[in-house]
Image (cartoon, rainbow, N blue to C red):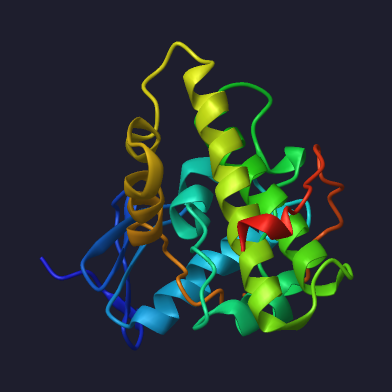
Length: 207
């Protein structure tokens, strides 16, 4: 039976998922089936924004699926990575339930670190020119994900599949799974200030 239409391209359904062009996204509260990708994303992120403003905590795994892993910095996305840093989500402690979701919390920390360190590379006076900025950004990305993998292996649970790989194979694994490869911002979102929980020291000799 086809569910009753409530708005063009949206149908309220009793399921546990939001469908975006055939891809499943888990949300909390009511659930919708969308046949318009942009509309689906707007609905999904509106729930994220309500959480950040003190609303209901949504499934942290959903948050991670939408932002983790972050994309590998490249000549194609560096400008957006630098310019829109304050418009991409961060994951402060209050986004997560008081217990559980350890994987999502580790992924959230990795995202917070990368965004903070990208800011250092782009605007912290560490680099000169796009070549050095890109080198710094790549090192920040690899360092943050390396710490993520170290933290994954410190638990008794299964580690992220990319962490099981080594060297360039690991970085390629993370890169191909990035849900936001162009570092686009979330319209209307302003990231909270989250001090980095560890320092990043760029080594220009790696360039």
